[in-house]
Amino acid sequence: MTDIVQLSAHGSGETDSYPVLKKWTYAFFCQEGEVLDWDLSVEVYNLLAKKDFDAVNKLVVDTAKGSNGDTVKNYKLWDLKDPNYASGLVLPGHTTAYYEFPSGTSEKNPIEMSHFLANAIDENKLSFDREAVIYVNACRS
Image (cartoon, rainbow, N blue to C red; front, side, top):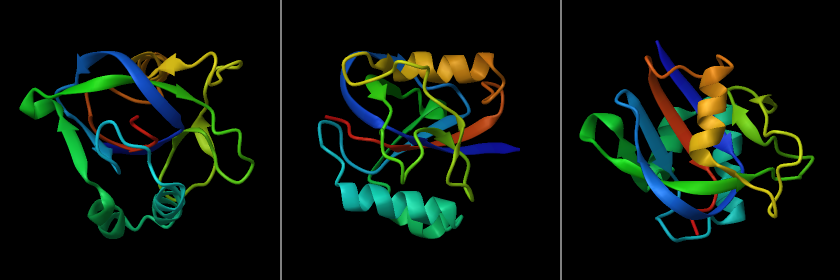
């Protein structure tokens, strides 16, 4: 079984990098250091809601895979604060988050991506011992 989720958030900056878990793949829609175009972000969100993985995968421009020994920047994330789009972990086929950011998370008080995903693992929302594809629908600036 493979966990497939969308990480829907605002994101920027980083403090360090961390290794990608062995069975995980991070899929990004903009290159490192770029701001994700809002219209593209909405398109990705809508395509994942339709479970149109072929179309989504055509929009992926960068990946990091644990099986390759890749690392990923530890981006700072926060809630979109947009009533039209969920923030947090969103399952394909859904438009609401099944795992949200902690209360108080904001641009001034972000959470590091590694901590957010570790919390999701701790709360059994993700598994480190199964394959996972994390579609990161957030800026990488």
